[in-house]
Image (cartoon, rainbow, N blue to C red; front, side, top):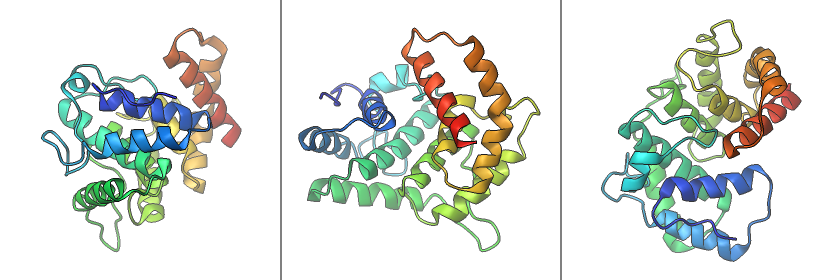
Length: 225
């Protein structure tokens, strides 16, 4: 199984995410190679908060797992950093090189979120970056996950548009994140999105990778309801 694309952190993470999403078995050798390659990008120039640096190719072409365009270079740096921590957590490779890189990346991101007793850090700047942050929290990549996710879902609810979607939050990436959050508030947001997901499934083509992923995300989300 080939997971690493030497020219792209985004494509490497995409391959890891696809196999994890589909529940495929990833061999030990493939997990070690992917985790080691990701770890080597920790703290390189262009990294966000000492996480994992995108390549130049990523700044031109990176997209979210569900196909939406990443809105800016800063978002690319942040989102791929969050997704990098999440991938290393789930690949579960515990070599010294990977452990050190993961610890440094997590410390860098933790320094960017400062909770108070009354207000955990629920959203992170924009809606797109928030979804990446939530996915990382849900995978155990950052501390205070339950409180932060509960606040994030509450803030998300406040952005409802009344159409099954949310203001300034990428729909399919958000739904994917919600399927990974085991909280009543997340399931409530999935029920809110259910009519829009059902409409999508009635009309969705399945030829492209993006369409296939969105269909799978929609079906999984409706099952969670």
